[in-house]
Image (tube, rainbow, N blue to C red):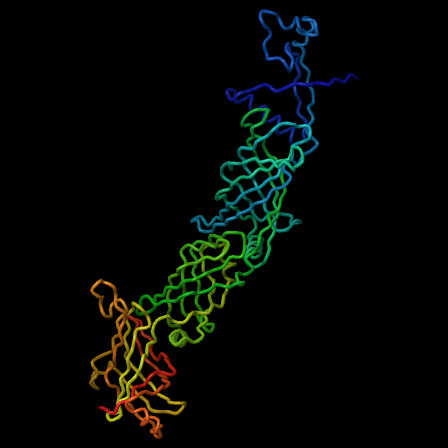
Length: 525
């Protein structure tokens, strides 16, 4: 048995012969997979350090070689088939992970899309002492729910190569380098819906989430072996560690304002400003989502976000929605009453049946938040009253608490108390023309109230006074207190039920209470 030490170099193939480049790519890929390649070895008239020319200055280089010319000629006629063993280091890609992940569910095809920054650590075999720059990668990634899962739940395969950037750390071991590539809207094919639901549940409801990766990647590289060579089917394993959204409860969603925009016969259109905090490091683009609005466990409306995107941190949205009556239940009236009077008006926001995406639906069906609604920042409906003792009537000054939307008062049924003692009751049905009323008391919206000043700036809304409303005094009113206040004022509590109309939407028997309201006491008719 004879052994030889052989050294040599590759030839510059250029890019003019795709077949030669393909052979070199196949050879390199086979080698990196640890497989043996059979190569044909033939003698050459020039050595590895020669420039490829047989003659130099008219002198035959073969005469300068250490071997006789006849032996060189003989060697060029002899071809040997020799096994070229692959590397013993098969895991060129040591690790793979992703950062800045974005998941998008808003595409018309309903197929989720994933974007992010792929980070791979590569280690060249010790015998490959060459510089390598990775230009692009084409990963084919299978995702597993657990490390010991037998089957993947999803596959991520970008439709086109991803541009890559190679960096080397001076502290890294010899031959190790980092490759970063940006994946943009790669199709996320769900292979197991049950495991995919578990994955989304971990992302949405847990503090941390881990997913396991396995697959192969093609890479286009520049190296001493040649430019733009494609190495195929490099195997890898990896993990993705992410922060979960922790149910989005710490802190929970916050409604910063709720405004009535328009009244229709069957619904009130509302606009709400909403802040959602995403504590995770994943961005979720959920597309169009409709949330149910529940008060005291009854649905009273909905709100729609046309493009719900949750980036890490605070996310502010403006949602359009509608409020409506629910099968004779007074729930909407109770909510509007609490909203008007500044009581605790807590709404439950539910994602049940809120999306057309079959992948998101199970997750949104579990989503529910109890959200405090801030009180109105507009003047209260009832500003003050005037008691006319001789005529047993009262006048109420009203302002529109709903901003630009028109408001009509049809019926008032109210009682007044002074220090918990009943003073009297007033009732008026302004729609009853037979009793001399001229129709509902109309309180224009703030945009329609009093025009503008000389500079075109809208003036604030003014109070609207009701006609004189008959008052039935209590059997034993606190006459002493009333007499002392004659020509002055009393602070009274008013409890009322009113029929109002917001544009075309009727709110009948709406409870409206106010404490410590100013009552002007007059002797006049």
